[in-house]
Image 1: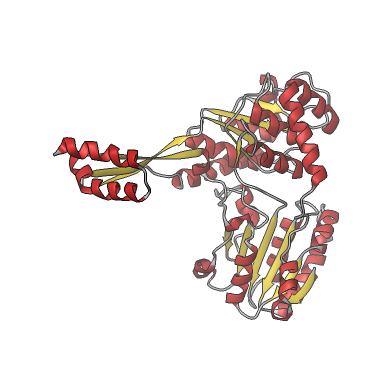
Image 2: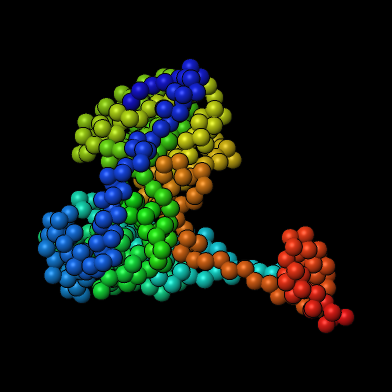
Length: 431
């Protein structure tokens, strides 16, 4: 990791230091994913079997997880593993229930207004698999979908080379009351959920993280006629840590490394007011990396990452808000009070005993968050993302008399006579 002083950088250098990797449009990726989507649209299940054989190196006889596989998963996991999943599920359920939107209505001058919420009927849940099956992601998707009341929850995840789905994922699906899982991953899974196949139902909206092929597929199907909406754009995982002179270098380094191990394109940034701390963190990163299993990935990630020295805590937050990180960790005194300085972030971890790992797994907040600076305009996944907000209005004759002339005037200003007339005929009737 390079150490730079923010005040000594030119405007162009400041842009570069906060630049994520691979931000240029990848035409090869776009064309590859387009071909996969078209093939799945035209050939359905046949294409899914072929792509699974090609990309996942396994030849399947069925896309569905069998009841026997679900039963086996319950037996394979030990009680400690099961309880960890159950505890995480309970915490996620509690948070997403508390944060679910509430219907409301009010009356003013004979005009009754309000808003009601309804679930999106058919949702697609994508859970990355492969070498690191993300059981936590299943919980983050399935639980708010259940709370929202979505009737059809289509879950896809890639199989391993033996054609199986990780037992932890099957157990988690079971406690989330999802009894149908399809063994398909990548762009082909997104295409299948967006347009439907002989086996996999079509959905209205697709949720969940994934590699660049999954992300590209979600973007493409969201723009296609008859496709499916996406939860949010996404890129490689990222974290920005703000630390003052009193921060614990061991903790700070561990937070940076926890994010760097995701993949070689992960982006980690430390912004601090202390040059002394910056050098301590660098030493700690080297020490801790030596005993971590994914150290080769970490090394690649850190080559593109930076430590930025700022002149003040306020400048630290200015830099952070400009970067708009997926995860923001505050290793500063009175960290809770500093929340008011946060304008752009996917999720904030307040204080030295709030590692990002806790939010990833079990505290209750959602770990599906906007990356690549999209925290400027997107929120992290929540129960509302699985719902539609519907406003309503109910006017009495008195209410229409109160507001009718205002509407007539505005309709006239816009030259929309029929709009005005719909009010005028009613006002005449009332008189």
